[in-house]
Length: 513
Image (cartoon, rainbow, N blue to C red):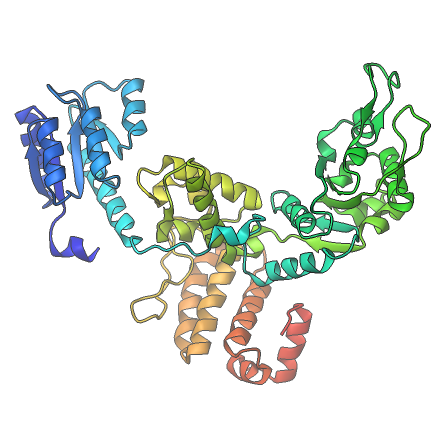
């Protein structure tokens, strides 16, 4: 933004109609933009090649000689990041599709609405500034370090990684729990890849996707004529996976009759095909996953208690994404690197403003939803940077994109006061309030930080009926203890409580320090 402050942005208008160039120049000049003109597509492309590159280009689509679409393609080949707004008097679907297909920032209809022209110019110039703000971007991770696809460095994910490492050396049965979309199958695949069975098959079965009357045939196979449609013998997944690892996803959806046969595999290592009498020995390691509460299902007698204990020898819980928001930038970076490698998108960066919204969003669909949003946004982005406008509206609105719900650092590193124009989530309020207070305590400015947090809470508390005090307290204790390197005595002094009281709160909140 400093460059924009020293000289006005330069806007190149390319149109073979002198009257259009004049009227558009007058509108843009009213905002003190520096306007340069080119009377044809050829002259416009030559001006871009000669440089310096304009901050924005308004380009007519229908011109004698080189068309606007052709000029746009030439311009983008010279400077892929160049922002171009196409102008047309023919607002057909084909025009809009062609404009966006070749990377136009936007397009505008003739005759012009001056206010619309200025709005588009302002939005485009802001996008230009945002892209330049991340010019020094460097990937935060090396995607080759995450070949399993499980990305994260948060404490909860470190616990997951440690447990995976501990169970790979044996054939112990593992139950993987967590919400849908958290990456339970990735954990199962990682266990298999690092185990002594890695050279043997890995087969994943989604128990929820197979009808009850077919799942036994799918898992154990069937003999010819065992049921209508069984025209031949078929081997089931357990036979095909002999010596390897089978992953039973959504096992909580499995019928009780099938659960009994899974128990037999675990206890005796043998199966029978549907309609068969032969007992077949199989050597298969079973990994299971569910997003259901199996303990409650056992109580309700919808899940076998003996099978539950057989499966739940070691449990790995995959945390929801909202529990590890610090991992969001790494996951976004990993997704973008993969998209670029697969040539599914050219976008490899995210603006700070967009990343702030991504880290504030609640992610009810967890990592799967985040991957989808990154893909959608990368496809829509005009340059190599995902901007705030490229994010889906539901993410921007739900995350409170119009509000600053966390303190932003100034040049000196201190937090600036909160500005709020939209309601943040209760958890965001809690985390933001605790963060600003804790940072103030750790830096020796507790009074100022508390005042900032109270100003913010005064605006936001009325919007949230659910209690948030424990969330604030928890976050504050964690941050202060972290700043004090786990020293309870120093942290208790900063927090204004006795060491014994702090120790009790740490235990009550289930914290590990």
